[in-house]
Length: 217
Image 1: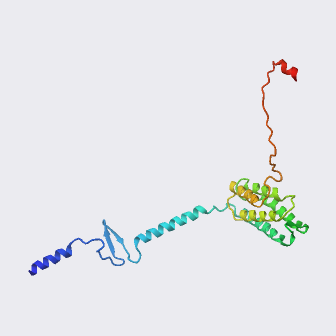
Image 2: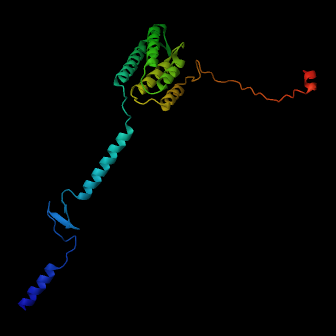
Image 3: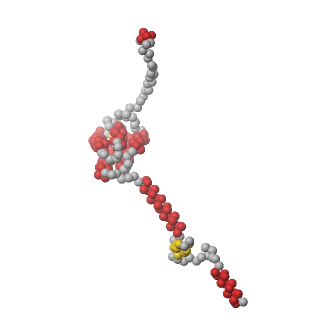
């Protein structure tokens, strides 16, 4: 009987255990397919994988959202300084409003801003002619105009928008015209003319041998 109980206990102990029943201590290697895998109770491997995956996706997303810095840092700094100077001048309009209109005392500020816009036009920041196109659009609204709060607000918004941009493209130009619309300004003012009438013409082939037409003429 003693031998039979010993044999029974041995078979029971040596039988295959389930995965849930295997005791795994902290830091103890567990064999799986001939490989050793470190498992930790306090830090599950599944949590580590999920965390690293989410972190990697977040970093990749941030990298995609960032614009590439300008190649010529010195030119970009000049561009930023011009924007800052324009914003400083716009901040001086406070006491120079008569209702919604800029009073005569604010003419000096207007002249200074117009001169700074000319400098901004010649700044080589960005690729292509996008900065020039934006400045021309801005000048079409403020040059030789009776300034009011709309002009000041428009200038402040567009200069703030430009100041923080590395990349200047077609979307930058479109944003400028969108800001004009928001302030109720006429985008066709200045050198840009909006067609007010459409004339239609008809082309007619003339037969050189048609003598009757010559008589009618």
